[in-house]
Length: 107
Image (cartoon, rainbow, N blue to C red; front, side):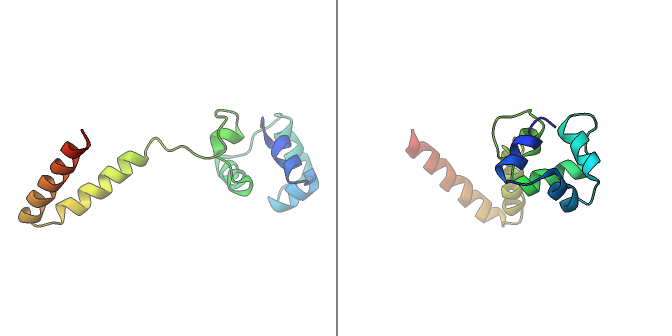
């Protein structure tokens, strides 16, 4: 784990503290911190939640602390489509007109 030592130090915790927190031996935690072994996916998620950082940041794939979802727009699109599909045809047409008018105002 590239950033475990850095993150643990920021919280002023010992390896023993971390081992207790995650119900593992101090040796196991030490091995993670020194990249001798790796935590499971579930443990990575627990660590990222504990340190309030993304898993990508934790393992060194990103320099951003927080998760930057590439899926978020797709989730929003799905939610909007679900709402749209539950509208009457008349309301769908009205919404399309409204959104088209708003889009044209911005340009």
